[in-house]
Every structure is written in C-alpha cells, then in structure tokens.
Image 1 (tube, rainbow, N blue to C red):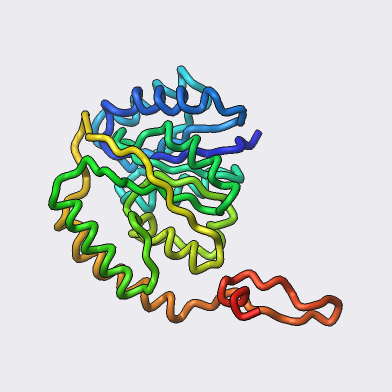
Image 2 (image 1 turned 135 degrees about the vertical axis):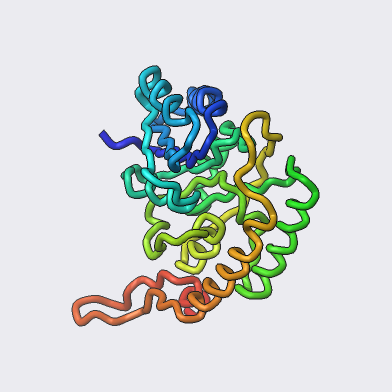
Length: 253
C-alpha cells in the first residue's frame, strides 16, 4: 500500500541521531491523520548507522531503510529515496537533528497554496563563516540565475511528487531544486522554520569543500536554464489551445 507522505532522510555516519530522529518524526506526525513512511537512506556509512536503522525498522514498521553500497553524496541519497517511493507528497530533512521534524506538519499544510514548500532558517545555529558563505552564495545565484531564494541549502522541504517531472539527478541537485522546480512552472513558497544546534555527530560539510563545486554547479545551471526547453503552447486539430503551463505563457496571455 502506498503511503500518502514519504519522509526521505539522507544520512551518513549519524549513528547517534537515528533513534531520536525517528522518535521526533513519529511524535510530530501523531496528530496528522494521514498515512506516512520514514525512509532513511544510508549513504554507505562506516559507523553503526545502518544497524540503528535496522533496529528502528524492527520497532516501527513505518521506518524503511535503504543503503548505498558506496558513498555517493546527499543528492544521490535523495534521488534514491525519490526512486524508491511512490507517494504523492514527499518531505525531506537532514538527519543531524538540526531540522525540527515538527515543522514538516506545518509545511504540509502550506501545500494548499504551492507545489514546493521550502524551509528558511531565519535564525541559523551555524558558525559565522557558514552564514556569511551562504549569503555570498545567495548573491551569486541571484546574479547568475536571475532568481532569488533565501535558503536553497535548507534540506527541510515538502513538495508534490509531480514537481520532480523534468528534474534530473546530479551531484548538487539538493541545492538547486527550488530554482529548477520554479523554472519548470511550479509554484514555490518559502516558509520560516526552526533551526537547532547539532548535538551529536559531526558536520559533513565545510565552506571550502563546497565552494568550488558550488561555483561550477552555478555556471552549469545557468547554462541549462538558458538552454532549457519548457512546455510550449500548441494547437491540436481536435481541441482548443492547450493549457499554458509555464509562468511565461501565463504572463503573456
């Protein structure tokens, strides 16, 4: 039976966070009268993460575990989760407990007004260097892509599965997903969320291991956006003008 909501969580060496994460998600969704599953995608951890996922599955049948045979990165783990589920609504968050699972229920309610709801960490519990680097990255995205989103690095999101149409897997997809979904003609909305300090494990990202990859990805996405072929209005011999799905056509009409 297909769940209404798939909560996909990429994890890598988060042994200490699995049990409390599942407990928090379960508590947050207790008040929501909808069927859901928790899909933990282990990106080839080399600690006890997979064992903890298996224990959680034994205790809670809503928990599913997927495991990469080699480390492939956060975007690959998310894509594995997308491919392995079929629910009409998808939620994502980090596995380090810095995202508050309680925010997911609030974001799900916001889907009445949009197709993709993105969390915005208005009060970030990160180092000043990471906060500054995020501001610089936002400015660069705005200049290169001519679109502005506050916090594309925030993993806490809720969206309709149909927004994945037209997306493709690449290392960095998780950072550019709001921009690509917006360019596909879907409605994207940003909502402030809670952000907490990490209490267990260590961060897998630093400023320097993201800088050059981020710059390279930015140029690649800018090229793709300029060359992208969107939905085109057309006339069918048997019907009237087809629905204009892209915002540009809606504005031109």
